[in-house]
Length: 447
Ligand SMILES: Cc1cc2nc3c(=O)[nH]c(=O)nc-3n(C[C@H](O)[C@H](O)[C@H](O)COP(=O)(O)OP(=O)(O)OC[C@H]3O[C@@H](n4cnc5c(N)ncnc54)[C@H](O)[C@@H]3O)c2cc1C
Image 1 (cartoon, rainbow, N blue to C red):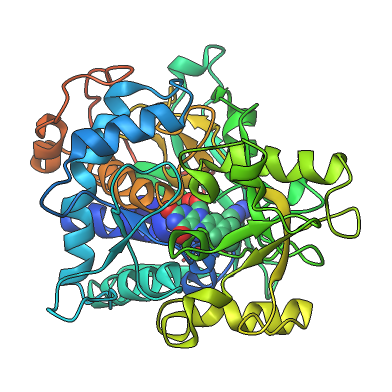
Image 2: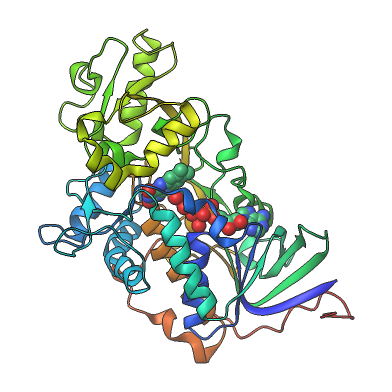
């Protein structure tokens, strides 16, 4: 079997994987991304709404942290939330410096808009294609740094020692097959493997997630002995198209879109579901309200409610939400400039995943996770809109730095890097000496 040797192997080329790979490379590691899709086809590209970051005067990371804790039903881990909210502005500005085409105000400042559950309009966006631009921006940085990408390689298993106690196990790499040829290969990681394989949405019938979102990373980590955390917390998004599950971004409600039932009532207020926040109450509240309307016979065709953005005017819609017009037209045959869109709740996001600390480290030495397949527990029972993308870049970067610096003393500076809020859930433990490269059999690498 061919063995490809690198310092750090990142499994997945979505937002978390790309950010982790760049960070590990910047620490001097020889990094490779192994991904079953080409990176820019990863599901991060579907993210429309934006990235929460406290960038403006009048806002600060503590308000962001407060909103996140409240939105999580107070079940998120406070130190991790504080890290997310403190690091997000820096990471967002880093994207801007890498060329991400954020939407801007007339004076040139980066635009921010309101999102559900936020006490300040702090969602930074690039039109309604934020994730698409995020992937392309970071992929350019990956190419620029010469990071090797094995795309259309499907990782099936982690190469982990078989010690009885998972805490004693060491991860040395992964096994994958080339989708085009069926060739099986090993990918050995001297310093660490970072799982960034995205969410498990395809477990559900009606979901906003792509067909590639099959929860592979969480399954592999679980089989290797890593606990999964918060798996009972699944988010349902209140505005998905009934026929396909395609997402209609929260940005529509952020810009002022209104929900109506079959009786023409603005039910979020008129039925008292959220008298203060209305349509911008957090996603679980709005999803439950819609379902109650349908269950109590005020839904349309016993299935959905209406989302109306006509009053925003064509100019604003085309400027900020143009792709929503295409989605409504292409998938429901609705001209959203002329009529309301049908919407209903759909599975959207898994708050739970592979248990990690704030450096992405799992209980297995050399195994890290970041992004939607991980659970550092910044979302508790409910993720706020716009809080997943900052999680990718904040914790992706931390996992990349930490994995790269793990076993090589000359790259160890990040291990003692300033931790904004002190210790997280667990200490990552003592450093281990550098390990020999993985040689699964006497023949070793065949090239
Ligand atoms: C429609 C939609 C809109 C969203 N909008 C927003 C938003 O506006 N703001 C926000 O904050 N969040 C948003 N989210 C959530 C956010 O986009 C996701 O949580 C996030 O993009 C997940 O990124 P990721 O890097 O963890 O995974 P992904 O982007 O899904 O990438 C996973 C990668 O892993 C690879 N992979 C998977 N399995 C394997 C395997 N076995 N072997 C090899 N490679 C593998 C894939 O090829 C892919 O490259 C949205 C989610 C959806 C579904």
